[in-house]
Image (cartoon, rainbow, N blue to C red):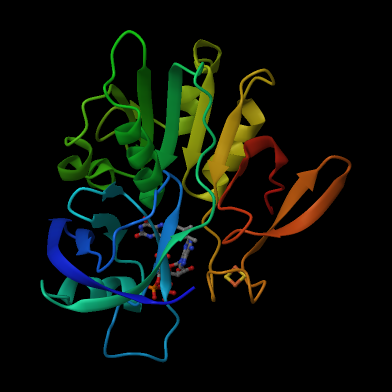
Length: 260
Ligand SMILES: Cc1cc2nc3c(=O)[nH]c(=O)nc-3n(C[C@H](O)[C@H](O)[C@H](O)COP(=O)(O)OP(=O)(O)OC[C@H]3O[C@@H](n4cnc5c(N)ncnc54)[C@H](O)[C@@H]3O)c2cc1C
Ligand code: FES
């Protein structure tokens, strides 16, 4: 797999510390599934640092663009805020598996928080148009109202229930507390966010409901070569260390052995 130079066509701050990057790709894009990600060189002047993984927030095959929702967490993700339109950033895409889907799943719950909103929002886009036949509900949580980035979420039409730890918007408490007890209404649950959130969801989810988690382990190569991103995954009686970048990032939620 080769690096592709993608051109930044828009880089917009959605809120302090949160950005939306739109990239134009030099070649027609392959089919991109919600849950897949790209590896991005955030600083074109720094060829020595590792690329960083970001979920694909949206992909448009007609104009050959991809977008990424990013949060400034450290040096390279913060550098992204300074990258002007016209800059070429090397990337590798699409990486990893996407969320599985069955045509008879019609009532879909998305449970997420933090940068985990990105793959869930891409999935929601994929399932449009919503209506009687396709009911998508988001359960999104954060520490406080600004973490739920209205400039991002307001771009989507499906019903969203919000939870904040400080009660500044929506339910006061965790998103899993908000969701707990609702799962029997849904055909499938998709989740992405901090491991503590997904572990709590795993503990409360009724056994009959299919559930899939997209993991966000730290990564190095992004393509399966270094084993730097493994997660413990139950496969039948065994537990195996699987590469989140290659065998994941999406796994059956109940198969993930979250660390303590
Ligand atoms: C599959 C996948 C999808 C991702 N999707 C997105 C996305 O859509 N938007 C987005 O903003 N970020 C996403 N991330 C996280 C993103 O890769 C990190 O924020 C980025 O690598 C941080 O790089 P940095 O140099 O800025 O920070 P660093 O200096 O490397 O780290 C800064 C801080 O961020 C924490 N951190 C770094 N990587 C991760 C991680 N993978 N998970 C949790 N905490 C981490 C570190 O522990 C540290 O506290 C994703 C990660 C993965 C593995
Ligand atoms: S990051 Fe190298 S194997 Fe996953």
